Length: 303
Image 1 (cartoon, rainbow, N blue to C red):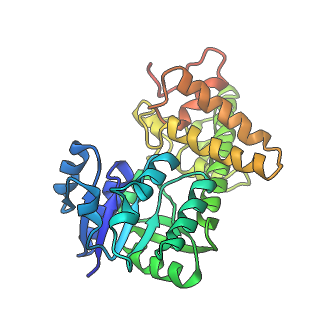
Image 2: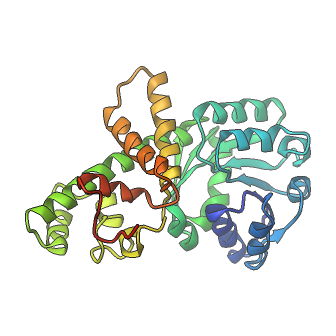
């Protein structure tokens, strides 16, 4: 039995912590949102009212937070992880952040005598609830192997991506590719409709052809074709557009630093930003499909 501290009990973190509880581990959870703490408590997490209380006896401390600013604050503040976690605890950040923040956490953790890995995930809320996430772990090999064992109750796949920051770098590139694929599915689904193709027959053909992708299999933006599509539920968020915009923007920042041109990612960013600017950032990222139609209306969406 392992004692975990979990910092950040949002849509992802709460479900991930619950899988650890179901695996018979002890999980102390903290979130600044009392509602989130109360909901986690109903699923067996030992929710506490302060971060120091959550981490003080932990074998492993997980963070799952909205952005790099939150991660830096949670680690570095006087009431933060470095000030209150046991020295032998392994620190694991599963947030999607900029590479600079991850590098900061690796460097500063090491200087303080802590073991740290970046361990972002892919699979979304449904994967967190099912315990089928993919983890991408970056850090020193011996520490990464320790982390690998600790994430197993939440995971279907665990990859050791390389040294520090290689996990988050993998995640940013993966999410950039996902969102570029969204554009292909948006344009392809609407062109198929305009040419009079049956949506399900077309999807079946693409599933056996070279146009097949994970997004086509999982997020196809036409109602009644894929069970897991947000189009079946008025594009209520499985992965919200504002989070997608954050991830693509982080990938573009990394590309700029590397001196690369990423026009596909720039197009994805512009369409996601358009959704956010219209006040639709809370809707699913696949709602960018509406921009294929000049009138902005698509099957499955009632504004």
